[in-house]
Amino acid sequence: MSDTATLPPAAVAGSLADTPAATLRLTEIFLSLQGETSRVGLPTVFVRLAGCPLRCRWCDTPYSFQGGETVALADLLRRIADYEVKTVCVTGGEPLAQRNCPALLTALCDAGYSVSLETSGALDIGGVDPRVSRIVDIKPPGSGEDARNRWENLAHLTPHDEIKFVLADRADYDWARALLRDRQLDRVCPVLFSPVQGELAPATLADWVLADRLPVRMQVQLHKILWGNAPGR
Ligand code: SF4
Image (tube, rainbow, N blue to C red; front, side, top):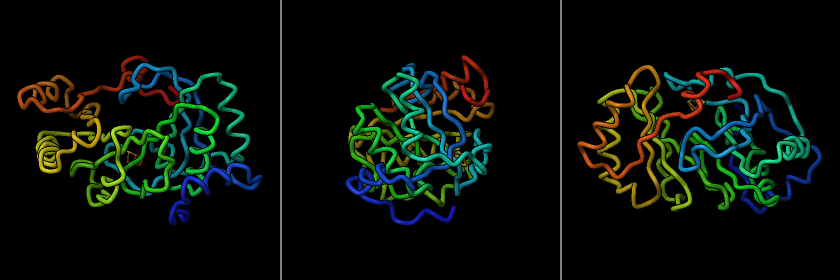
């Protein structure tokens, strides 16, 4: 992506929403149940923006890496409104790789939506509107992208945000547990532990979390239990 430059602060991002030329590249938009985080189960409009500078080994959305429909921000807001659901999740890909993503987020907050952002943790979240609940990945070694973790992001997190680890094996779990304890991440915001589908059995991860009495929320992806890996669900 060429537009991973410094993100505009939220106040500026808000005014960008009124700029006719502001566009985003959209992979898909759909209504589903939120499958993860503390919002699990809530009917949610998902806005999947195209493009990602990372290549996690187990990525389940590689179809978002290229292409996408170019849409004006104002048109995208209208399409979101058509669903008549007030909870929106902006995801990817890596949504923050698009310079107009903060403007979209601020416009959604201004319109009264409850907004979450799913981000890889590799890009700066400092310019994201503080009304947005930021779901920030920390990439373990099994992802192949742990060198991309932007540790400065931790200083921006509030109890309104969430940290997510997606774990492929015991080595990933041990790595995440050490980080959790060393940095006392659970005192910052809720911490989510998820297994990589098809690689780490959910019950195995659950047993590890219980054995260690870890202050994390172990989660599975509700939408995949309901609908498998179908895009748009
Ligand atoms: S950051 Fe997300 S979209 Fe990008 S490669 Fe990793 S899992 Fe896939």
